[in-house]
Image 1: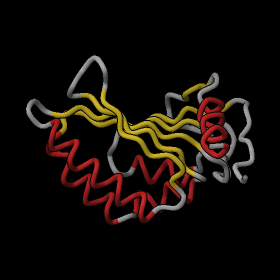
Image 2: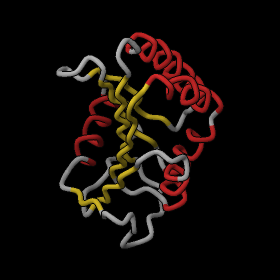
Image 3: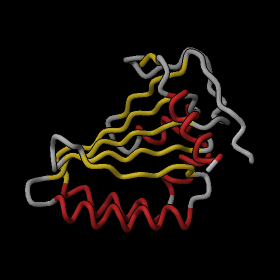
Image 4: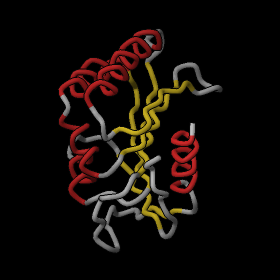
Length: 158
């Protein structure tokens, strides 16, 4: 329970006032060794939401089994749009995102779910290495990186 409370604190802290740089440039090189948040917004095609849910649940199980650097992984439905979904992910560090992007179960999920979507965007919040940001953008996924101006991450060890 203490871990969950700490994780919620990390999540809340990372959503403190942040600024996005429209051109994607970074003002200071990020080392990428801190936890950060990724929000992926998906919108299903009409009559595809059940398939999106089924594929996403399978992807969630695969990520849980294969990615120790994924600290939080939830899939939520938009309360005002039954075709809208949001992945909320907290990564231990940038290396965990790189691993995620190279993970075969994720690649299969993206190949299977993409034809069922009319939009898919990603937002990164926090200190993320240029390598990880560039790797994500290279997938062609519209990506915004909100860089932290200040804040902290508490020690996650019990």
